[in-house]
Image 1 (cartoon, rainbow, N blue to C red):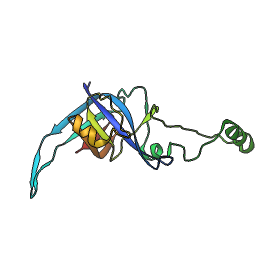
Image 2: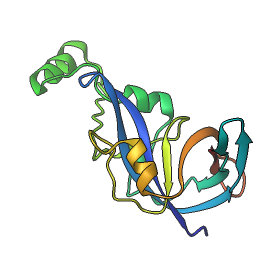
Image 3: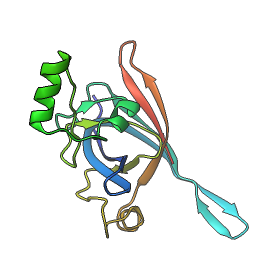
Image 4: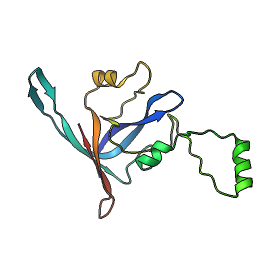
Length: 164
């Protein structure tokens, strides 16, 4: 139905690195509606570009699964388990343990304020020398998510993402 593509970089705190990492996902089949604008301030001009991106619930996301932001935030192991520890916990407690490991090749994605969106498919990893500032210098249409409106009921279940 929709033909636009975006690259989303989900912001995630990595306790081992003691810094944020950004995990890239390509979304195909979205609708992008941008408003180009400029605000004049005392010191000169300020970019005031903004827009809305509609992401259908069944968007093509490289086969990755959407999860809510809080679950996504908690999904990177704050505690690591060896295979033997997991087996022992299962035997001793008789409980199921959900283990989710999130890496740069993660199988999940989310939508949260502060995540970065670039129009189009962008082969770029935010890490080390590849900063967000460099991303903005080298690519047009780089935005930050400012709002997420969930509309998963009705004829077209989707998210409306506000970007600036």
